[in-house]
Structure formats: structure tokens, C-alpha cells
Length: 143
Ligand code: THU
Image (cartoon, rainbow, N blue to C red; front, side, top):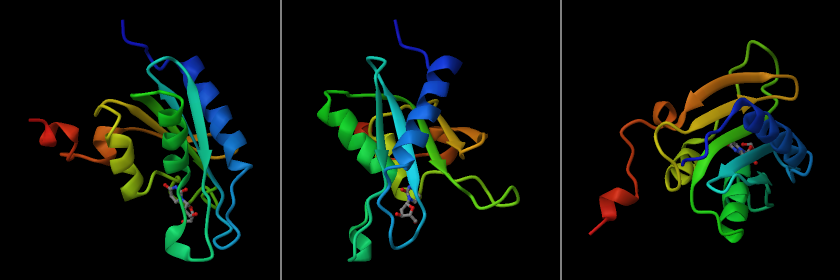
């Protein structure tokens, strides 16, 4: 039986991503981001962005969370939440950057929920397939 990302689990992911965001190291952009992922065992793995004085070496919150999931022995991502402060209701919600959409794709299916939240609310609900249509993935390299 496949684990379903229930509303209760999604709420836990939102909480975990908000807590991770508090740990962000973002002295250059001042833009703190948190991410949380649900793995195939029902576990939650979180991450924050970690910037660097050599700017391109900075790491996104999603990449940090993926590293934690893999280190813990996880192999699939069943749901993802990203938390960032968009800077006002007229600004678009903070969604995963293009590179992180591809990083998520490595371990996730097209129907995986990806929620974009801020500190108050869930601003938008997507699936990975909507954020990254017609994507390239591990299947393309299968023998
Ligand atoms: N950032 C993330 O952590 N995840 C995203 O998907 C969008 C951007 C971070 C990178 C950088 O530290 C800061 O937000 C500003 O771009």
C-alpha cells in the first residue's frame, strides 16, 4: 500500500518547513527558506538554505532537505512543502526554483503535491508535474 500524503501529514510538513526556515543561513540575500519532504516510510526531512560568500555556492532549502532524506535512507519523495515570505499578498508565493524542481523530480512522481507556504498560510498548492511538465528523469537513462 502506498503512503498517502494526508492533510494531517501536509500540516506536519508545513510546520517542519517553517521550523527549518528559522535555521536558514542567508546573510547575503536575507531571504530565508525552509523545505520539508515526506519520504516513502512516512518520515519527514527538513532543510534550509545555506548561502556562501562565493554566491553561486549557496544551497537551496530543498537541496538540503533532499540530502537529509537520502542520508536517512529515504528513496522517494511523496510530498514537499516550501516556506518563504513572499513580501506581501500581491507577490507570488515562494515556489521551488527551477533547479530544485529537477532535484525533486529525481525522487518523485508527477502527481506529488508541492505546497508553497508562508508563515501565516499555505499560499498555493501544485503538483510537481505542473511545476515541471514533460520532465527529464531517471527513466530516460534506464537501460
Ligand atoms: N532559495 C531556496 O532555498 N529555494 C528556492 O527554491 C528558491 C530560492 C534560496 C536561495 C537563496 O539562498 C535565497 O533563497 C534567495 O534566492
